[in-house]
View (cartoon, helix red, strand yellow):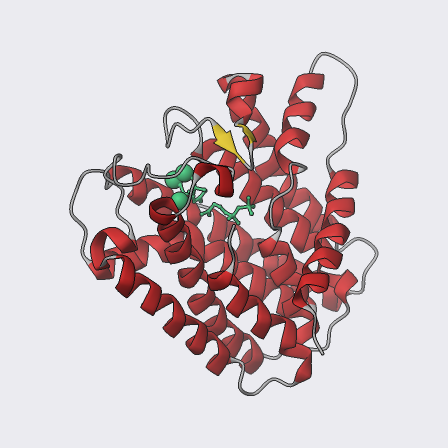
Length: 298
Ligand code: IPE
Ligand code: IPE
Ligand code: MG
Ligand code: MG
Ligand code: MG
């Protein structure tokens, strides 16, 4: 039987090692920059996006190792997005993963640069994962570089963050909120799944089905994140809660209420499972991950 707990621990450990080797400290005048990058990158975290990338690669019969470069690149981008998200000019948070936020330790300038460094270096990590491989793989990596920049950039996560901040204190309807979440959070989950599958040699049809899975997964993830802000404690989450409403953020519980938001997350898990109907046992990790995303306590 599949043991999700063990799977998550194994995969997180693999990612942890790869990340620690990817961003290394250098002596010299910029040493605090590298320390600051590692402070946030290696501070734990669920590693959900990289684990999804590896699981999607496996779901189509690929080798885990083929998606590790992509997985690290995505976690670096996720980490940069959280460092910047926590800055005083954005969500102004002082706690992340149970520790002081990056700018509280290193100051705003170095925190901003640590984010810039992680974002930019992520593309180096992904591009170099094509080193020494045959042209067919280089082609796949190139396509994934383009798709990753769409997912992370001004047509993806950055667009979502802009809508999130510009929308503070303003009413938002459900269609716009779903759009906001699909960009702010959904886009990185989408590239994790699609990119991971592509690294594993997925067919066009497989990528299409996995995209439906990722869409449901990503929305479920952010609805749960919104619910945590309302229903969980700062101690449990390792980040401040009860802040979204005070800041006038558009959220699912804010718009639909807590009960209907929980109901929606259950429906989204079912939708994610249906999208995997044509996949066999190799997709078991993806199925369990979808259930986990709404049952998680952190
Ligand atoms: C939190 O993401 C930030 C959002 C996009 C809502 P995670 O809940 O995946 O954070 P970590 O990486 O596990 O700390
Ligand atoms: C963060 O969303 C999304 C990104 C960093 C792209 P939130 O602002 O809701 O994340 P938390 O709640 O601070 O982790
Ligand atoms: Mg935010
Ligand atoms: Mg935030
Ligand atoms: Mg949140």
